[in-house]
Image 1 (cartoon, rainbow, N blue to C red):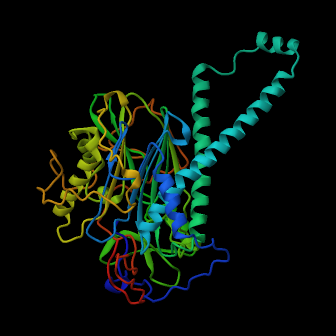
Image 2 (tube, rainbow, N blue to C red):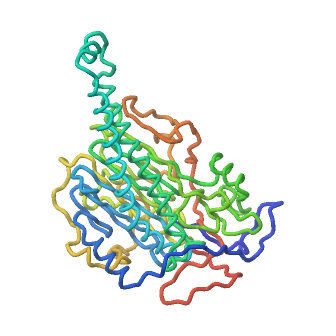
Image 3 (cartoon, one colour):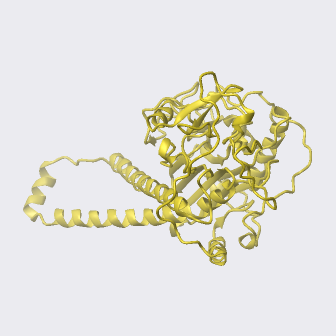
Length: 490
C-alpha cells in the first residue's frame, strides 16, 4: 500500500504546525525474550506443513490466492487460506495483510502466521464455555418435577418458532466468533508490542480476515484492505456488495476518537483528499489509516487495533468473496473486481487474473507512480461449480515465506481483461454499506458492531502513501535512520 512520504517534501495545510523532527520513543517495561532464529524457522516450518493451509500463490478447490511485488522494494503484502480451520471440515479462514513502515513486511507475515492460531484458540474456549453453560441450564430445567413440566407444556404456547430458533443459532455463532475475533486481535497487538526481533514502533499492518463456517460468514477488519461479495440480484445480474468499510481517518467517528486522544488528523496541501494521523507535537508519521496492528508510536493517540466485526448469512445467490489489499482497490472498483473474477478462465487462476488486471490499470491511471504491492484471496462459495483441478504448488510448504510468483512481467495493454475502464475508482451502481443506488436483498441477514454508522468512506480513493518520513526496508542495504530522510516508500 502506499502510505509514507517525507513531510519535508510536502506542504502542510495553512495553520498546521511546522515539521519538527524526532519522535521520543517510550521504553517498553516488559519485552519478550529474543527468539532464537532457528526456533522461529522451525516454528514456521511446522505451520507451513499443515494440510489445507496455503500462503503462497496457488489455488485449491475452494480458493485462489495470488500476490505480486510492486515496484517499491520488498513485497509487504501477505495472505492466507486455511481450510478445515480449527479441525472443522466445514470451516475456512482467509485473510490478507498489508504491511507499512520499515518492517511492515515482517509485521504482516507475523500477523498472518499468529492471528489464525489465536483466533482458533479463543474460539474453542468460547465454545467449551457455552457448552458448560448450556449443560448447567439443562440440569436446572431438568430439576423441575414432571407435574410442573406437564403444566407448562399443556398451558403455554411454544416460545420460539423454528425460524426464531434458527436466527438464535446464527446469532450464537456470530457472538462466539465476534468475541473470539476481539480477543485474538487484542492479544496479537499486545504481543507485537513485546517482540524484540520485530520493531513495530513505526511499522504495522492492516488485516481483513474472515471465517466461513457452513453458510455463516464472520469478518474482522482493521485498516484499509477490503472484502467484497460477488452475488446475484433479483434480475440474476452479478453485483458487488462491499462487506467492510475502509477504516481511514476521514471517517467522522474515527477522527473524533483520534482527536480525543490528542492525536491530530489533517491533510497535506498537495493531497487534500487524504486524511492522515499525526502525533500531537510532531508532523509525523502521517498514517493514512485509523486502525492497524503495530504503529505503537500512535497507539496512545487514537490509533487502535480493535476490529470492526460483521456477519452475513450466505445464500445460494452468493458466488464468491474477494479479499484484497489496496493495491487492487486504488485502481479498480468493486464492480470491476467482481466482473474480472467472474470472467476468469478458471477459478484456479482468478486471483492471478485480478492482480494482472490491476497492474495494467496502475500503468494507465498512474504512469508516473510505482505500482503498489497486490495481494488477493478469492473464496468460492459453491464448490459444485468449481474446477476440480488444483494448481497449488505441491511443495509450497517448504518454500521461503518471501517467495512470490514473478512469472508475469510483460507489458500488457491498458485496462482489465475484457473490461472497459470507467476512469473512476467507484461506480454509482455498487452496493455500499449503509445504502447506495441498489439495495441488498431483504432476506440477506447482516449484523455489524457499528450498524448505526452511515458513513462509508467509499466516495473515492486516491493514490496515496500510507506513512510519511520513514524509509522502506530494502534487502541488502543498510537502513537509513537519519531524521531528515526524505525517501518515499510504501
